Length: 612
Image (cartoon, rainbow, N blue to C red; front, side):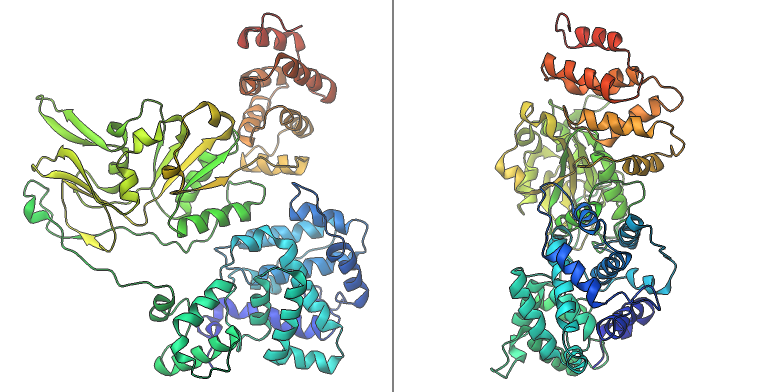
């Protein structure tokens, strides 16, 4: 049977080579996957990893997987660190570059090596297997690494505990390997994607390159008519039979449930879209363009890029963004001030190769600003002037469709129900007629794209593309004091938290400084200490820390930096708390802080009539 990697062998064959090496060198032997000639998968190392990782889970609230792993590995021998690195290598081998980027994978492995000062040659050919990936993994794969990694380790351990001949049998017999995997999954108690991933990596001819439980079930259901043997109840066995029969129907294609369009379309319930003629003939006033234009669509199969981005759990954050957008949701990035939400919104548009329109919401917004309304021209004649939304979906000069995503900064500063108006209905799939006329005398209509694929020029019809998205930001610090959002609005959006780092270190500060092109900044320790103290009183993001860094790049005037960028964020805190904050800056940092100057500012800015 022809399997998928044979079709794209130049890109993906290295993945299967790495998996085969893991099988022969590590599972059938005790050798290393990365450090050739060394023995890493020994019983001693495996027993230690079980003890410190599987049997001693770190349940600390708020700690991420990497920080927990660092504590678990502390004081262990080098061999245990190398085993952990190779386990994480296998964990990262399957995820497609659109789920976890190559840079992220390598940084994670290099970080573990750095904890023990292990020589890590990132140029080795084995790491080429991490570049492309085989398939998409869901958010759970990133957010629940403990369960996924525990499953991976326990399956490997179970196989390693078998006599050599039985190990060979397990690794080559699909039914036996599936039995081992099922037993471990029941022990874990979670429907981990690693079960499907390991089965495919170890026996790709028998198991599909699919990580999702749901996708396997959907495919089996969509092609259930091909399963004529009622004794076949296992989903993986069903998929194998389905593939074999589909191969006979498509003898000239390498069958792939994601890449073969006719096959994917059936189980995903995708229908062929209709092409409906435009309405130029009814609108002679429109520009003389007699051809139709395809409604611009977006390729949602993107690779996350991280240039210029530093976020805690960046891979999880980008996975949430990509999943929400792919599933048709608009998104709202929420979090404290200065966490980089606006910058991230622009980066998201760059990732999808979309030219966005960016606006800042205002309390006086109405449908006039967002949808549009009548406006007088130079002669006093009224004409329909498109609002922010409609300008994103049609070119004013040609009247042909466009797809400019809309970034709305601080969206909850507007009265959303009043400002968005009829857009709610369009986003729900309804056509809306506005009480306005175009220059051609036709009533203005807004409608969703639906099954349309192309339209002709029209001055009165606005098509909202299926792939059009709103990306908004919201500062959680002032949410309660601004306009509330209705349920009708919220259910059309995915709310994605963009938080501040839970653990602030000098190394983290250096990462930010590199992004800010301030590698020579001299006060790293001080900046780190100040950020930690600030977050005890008001959570702020790195953008404000960047302001402090730029202000103190060539001098030590932290007093002015605190006045200019930090204290205004403390609106609403009690006098006692502000006083406590200033005292901690003086006592706990080596920055030269002019306490009297700060006191004078506080007296004036917060109008407290005396700080002492």
